[in-house]
Image (tube, rainbow, N blue to C red; front, side, top):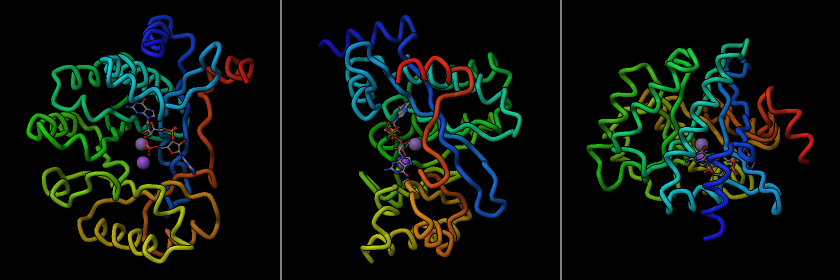
Length: 251
Ligand code: G
Ligand code: G
Ligand code: MN
Ligand code: NA
């Protein structure tokens, strides 16, 4: 399709692809503990295209490994320059787990950037653990042995199963933003936030509340015992320091 071809061209030239970063705050210290790397595509005719649109296309047409590798390298390179020592969190597509290219790609990004492995967090969704479960879990174990932190993203949506938490000892659970968004108006969403936060405490896994946009939502997730928060209240995704100027010319 047209989008496949232009995404392929964008990956080759690299001029239209950007990595934006959104802060993740540790509620105990109040500091930025990590930044999530989020892919952004500025198409010459269509303008900004969301990863919600182009990541599925990249997955379908076999470009996802190149896209994730691009983001991984860029994110590690940026994080190596951050003076506050914050971690960088990179999303890896579910279909990459259990493929022989993933672990070498992470190792290469760390080696090229000089970033210490314990400053890299890999975010995977539960979909990653379906199907070829053993290959996926083996990859996560290898990454963990290298010192990389592993987060379970979008928890509570999709194919949520508590079996995943038994199959692999995640370092963090990210509570999907949809629950946080509605927690103040829908008791069942507040109950889900509380249940996941409790689960994290009992398992000794840090929980991250995503999609925190207001002070009221912050107070709620703090009360429920979430360890970290992410959302527009603290900051939207913004381009890395090296790209600020280039992006401002596009807007
Ligand atoms: O940034 P935004 O909220 O629009 O992201 C939408 C979705 O795209 C999220 O689920 C996010 O995890 C995913 N995403 C963003 N960047 C990347 C990336 O570099 N690789 C993969 N695989 N997914 C990404
Ligand atoms: O699936 P994943 O958690 O990786 O996706 C993160 C997505 O959530 C990004 O696309 C980011 O732009 C979006 N996001 C981050 N914070 C907020 C927020 O406070 N509100 C909303 N609506 N979206 C957010
Ligand atoms: Mn994520
Ligand atoms: Na998420």
